[in-house]
Image (cartoon, rainbow, N blue to C red; front, side, top):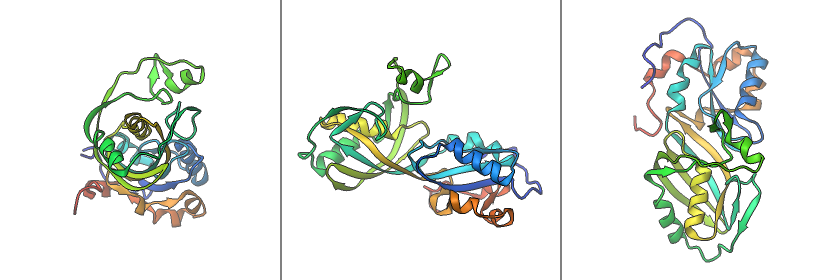
Length: 250
């Protein structure tokens, strides 16, 4: 449920701005550009996207930053592509190749069977290349130094993991999950189960809690607006309680 201490106030920029994040920027980069361009005092975001991932990034403006915990813990939906036959150390396309195998014998039925294992509740071991901290140090910094440390498996839930198309060595999918689920780790684990390896080749987020990519505009489009034009794209803070999660019917 949304925080109960939300009360309307006559500030037009207290709310949420949906950005279709381009590849190559961190979530912090997007926050910083919007803050500086429009001279906003307070801007945050409702859930990090990896730099190479695209899609829905919810920016929190002004008192909208109070919704941070609500959106960080919200369910999320992704469209992605896994590349079979190549395993990387980061479990995505940015990492170094650590193993290769021929995936040509994998059938759609085998792939779907492997994917079914990663629906519902299961424990997932976070990747070394992640922002999780060990004694105050992010794991990705340890990974850069060639270190690997034990990670505690975490309980996650995947509501839907659906195969869209297979064109070997690639396969596209939709995945809807709870907070803290590493999609690249899911792809990596599917590849391990199939015996040929896999990594996440591309990822696009389409849903965060009650918000969808249909409400978002490209970052360049938003930065070309003046403040009056931008206001039309802001979802007001006091409208949040009236919104349902996007996965639920009206």
